[in-house]
Image 1: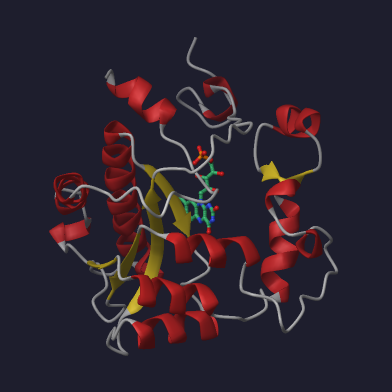
Image 2 (image 1 turned 45 degrees about the vertical axis):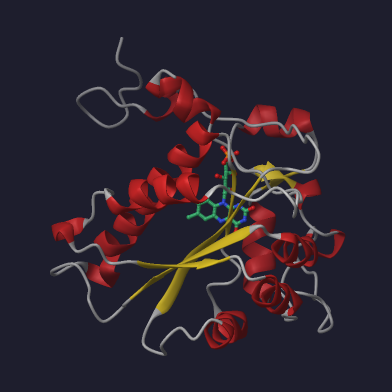
Length: 236
Ligand SMILES: Cc1cc2nc3c(=O)[nH]c(=O)nc-3n(C[C@H](O)[C@H](O)[C@H](O)COP(=O)(O)O)c2cc1C
């Protein structure tokens, strides 16, 4: 496959995966190999990856119940469009229908009984694989404020594995909600992740149980390209 085509066809697959359709060990190894060769600041290789395919562990993680934070709901709302026309016009952000109704208003107060994300919890449980990428915040890239360079490096790991999965026809869903607050504490406890490590992000891997197409939008190249000086849009 052409490189640009692979990049364009990589996408998020947020729906449920078929719990019976396992990921071949060889494919999993290739995805981890792609992560292994990611560029990282100072070649720090600032990541460890917990591969979770044990049904009991997946079930325990999917059962975690905590309301989404009010900050998340407020800031999430700013990225939402409420129709395909609106999203096509804005060219950035995502469709509101991807989120539970209670998250689609800026002043929503999530229910205490709610899962951190109702559909994600269920989808994690059906597996077949969840990758939990962790890092040591005590080992920052040299003189990098807020370890910004370390965070970019973790992003490179994500993208390398995403492209590899895509090339193998394996679907990929980044799950950020396991990385903060009480949810992160519980996931770390379930997976025996040492206290000093943080969860950067998690990934659901699998084969979808139903085909779900959704609208993907991007700005045009000339919308974000500045020729020589900022403000001089495009390169023509
Ligand atoms: C750092 C990062 C965190 C993300 N977190 C989530 C997440 O928690 N849940 C989710 O469904 N998608 C998550 N995504 C996926 C983005 O929403 C997605 O890439 C974007 O909407 C573009 O859609 P596409 O991946 O289909 O091109 C994340 C992506 C990145 C790079």
